[in-house]
Length: 191
Image (cartoon, rainbow, N blue to C red; front, side, top):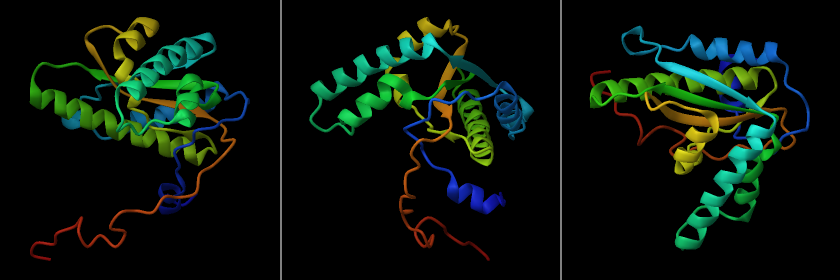
């Protein structure tokens, strides 16, 4: 797929087919993520590839947190459809948890988060290129302590994002871009 088409065709998929994703494709996706640019070439990212019963454990825990947030707040963006997605990660056969090195130094932490976000972008684009769906999720961070316990994540790692990975069962329509003509998001200086 041509690059600009790839960028515009990537979607946040929330429903997946019950279809195995082969390890070779997962490794291709993670290799693309590993080629992301990073501050000082630190390459601070790590990936945990999850399948099977651990996804159910993650989903059960996340669902409980989402339901608690829903009941405590009238201004929540969560609805019942999202609760179902959270509980099952959309039925995806694979979930990838993206980590970075934790740091107490604000500038290092920021650089690590930004670098790892670049790796995450490469990951979701590579998946799209292979016909696979993803959904860049930060919501599971509301359940970070349980996620760390379930997956055995050490304190020297920071969870950046989580994405289901699988063959899309439903592909959402593109959502309109805010300021699509970039009149408010771009300032030209001296050009």
